[in-house]
Length: 77
Image (cartoon, rainbow, N blue to C red):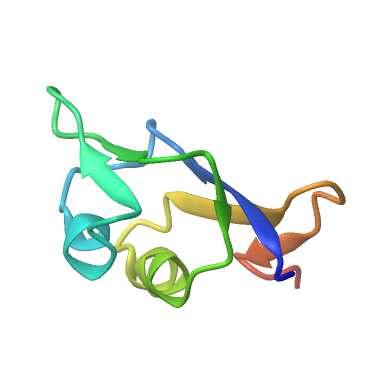
């Protein structure tokens, strides 16, 4: 069984560019206010979701390992 992730969007940072929706249409959607939300806060590890986080223009997406809370993205410095 693979890793499970917790995906969170910092709505105070999100500018509604929809880059996440284009890169991972199954992972993100925009709400009525054009702010991103994960489709599911808890999900199986997914390369498209990781790419969406890495390419968010304002780095509003955080991914952690379920259970341990260890950061997946952004990585710890």
